[in-house]
Image (cartoon, rainbow, N blue to C red; front, side):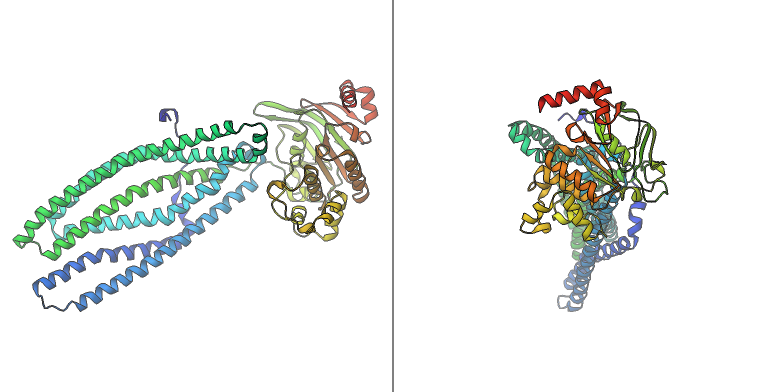
Amino acid sequence: MNEDKVIPKKPEKIDLIGFFKPYTRLIIATILAVVVSNALNLLIPRMIGTSLDHFQLNPGFNLSSDFIFLGLVLVGIFLATLVQIYLSAYTSEKIASDYRFKLIDKLSRQSFGYITKTKPSDLLTNVTSDVDAIKNLVSQGLVNALSALILLVGSVTLLLSINLKLGLIAISVLPILIVAFIFVFSRITKYFKLAQENLSKINKVINESVMGSMLIRVLNSQSLEQAKFEKVNQTSKEIGYKIIDSFSALIPIVNLVSNLAVVIIIWFGGNLVVSGELSLGQFSAFISYFNLLITPIFILGFISNLISRSFVSLGRINKVLNAPLESNQTGSGQVSQKIKGKIEFKKVSLEYSGRQVLDELSFVIEPGTKNAILGPTAAGKTQIFSLLTGLVKPSSGEILIDDVPLGDWNLDSLLSQMGLVFQDSVVFNTSLKENIQFKDGLDQKAVDMAIKTAELDELISSLKNGLQTQVSERGTNLSGGQKQRLMLARSLVIKPKILLLDDFTARVDIQTEKQILANLEKNYPGLTLVSITQKIQPITAYDQILLLMQGELLATGKHQKLIQDSIEYQQIYKSQQSTD
């Protein structure tokens, strides 16, 4: 991969104070445990050195008190480390849980336009990999970085306190090691960001391959999908190689510098011991503290990798959390009342990315009537439902429900009285009952009526577990028509006043559709029905048909009127009759 072609985006600004503030007490408690455990660790070499000097000066000296004190310190280290591990794990899991909830909560309130523009693979990475990264920021990054800093500062201070000259020689290696780490990590930070971004691409390719596995096999295009995955996988491997190459140059440098420093320390320190300027115990403690000096630099170097990745992930998460909610959406108003079912569009237009999808639509649907929106593919039919339910906003014009502007309605009140059956069947990996009874507070009578109206009662009675039958993932144990009727029952269980059917005829046979329409008329009197369709035969008895082509409303009226007045409608009707 040519790194010059990939320019990492500017990361989101990270507010660490705001990030840690809700968890202040837990963070402070964790920091205290880290300080105590590492401070006690710094005592060990000095205590061992003192005991060694006591024994050297007086071979008959009783070391029991020294060992008792050393044992107490070791117990203290054990307890402090235990508390530190528990608190850091608890805090990191709580932060991860909170941020997953924040992300899901924000996405559930975000506009439909935002969701459609954002890549699902990126959102999946935000909720999984990015959240895990900020969890590691606390459980590993914060704890290890703080431990390393305490050990680094403590060991430097103690080295200088044991012997100033020898201490200065020892810490002279620090600038060399720090420069080496800064040089390496300044190069690889951008690769960590690229690795996280490439993970989203991998998720996208895998998701598409799994979701389209049936089509891929039918078209025998496994090699093409494999090539797509190989491309992003190869990119991931190349980024990993670049990170490894950078690290491979760092470790030999650190080993060389630290080993040379040890040789020099032993040479000068040995002479100081022989001359009596430094005791054997002090020299032993000095060597131990020098080893402690090198270890934190390694830790800080590798932790900077983790922290860098965590900051990238936190920036990506903040980008989602800080994305503004679209104003003036349906639901921003206060109108909350029972609806009659009247729908009116006044010169409504809709644009997507500069493309005119709907062009000044104006029509009225009276309450309690059956209406059809007819037109070819890409005529803009489904967008009418998206506008009507407030999923998207019109570019211009006005939509009214019962003569009340859509923006003045309370979203919960409005949608609780509208049923929508999507063109694509949306079923969940749970029981049939839970798929139908998707809201709390619904009585069994309403559920039974919805099942009967959707012509699902025969299917359910034929199943061994009835309504408790589990729907497989993506509903693979149901046919297309069964899933469609399941969605219809879900929309009817709330006893809607407006029912929107998006191409319902595509997966239900004509006889079943006729029976369902008869059931609707019988069981839900006064229901306003709006059905998107491409077939004329099932809608010849409807009260109104809206003929839509390329986003424009060409004609409205009943079947007989359109047959006489609309050339386009005549052409569609004749074409479908000849096909039949």
